[in-house]
Image (tube, rainbow, N blue to C red; front, side):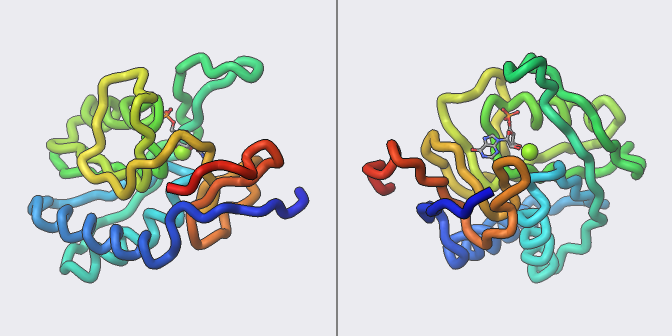
Length: 185
Ligand code: IMP
Ligand code: MG
């Protein structure tokens, strides 16, 4: 894929600051027997930084992964979520922190939260790097939110277009010719 210009929305320093603040808030909630479950793939970079920030607050969570995908029929999301790889740990009786990149319709996070709650987790809280307001299709709010994101398709810091741009250390918007005049935030 040819490299296109990326307009930075949240730079490395801003993300790092929010990660430390979120880790402090998570620690202040006094989690017990904490299991962090990162939702693959988009959250991998955020989760990696957030758990290290959590370590600096004195927390010692276990860390697991679940790979979920919105089920597509053609190009239209059916609203169903599919488990591509499940967690391997027992969650019964534990505090679980779900970590995802973006909360948009809420279907992915609601599905994961319901799943782990049904398996007997004692508390399931949620942390997302970005939240797009006014896009919710199901009723869910994240407990920890990095940034309220304008309604652009964003990439970087783990998030992709067809697996490109995940490596970027910041979050940005891919500029297309008709977006050249987008207002800054
Ligand atoms: P939801 O189930 O609609 O809340 O979808 C959230 C998921 O859609 C996120 O975990 C992302 O993987 C993906 N997603 C939504 N918006 C964007 C975006 O702007 N860039 C990259 N991925 C996105
Ligand atoms: Mg995702």
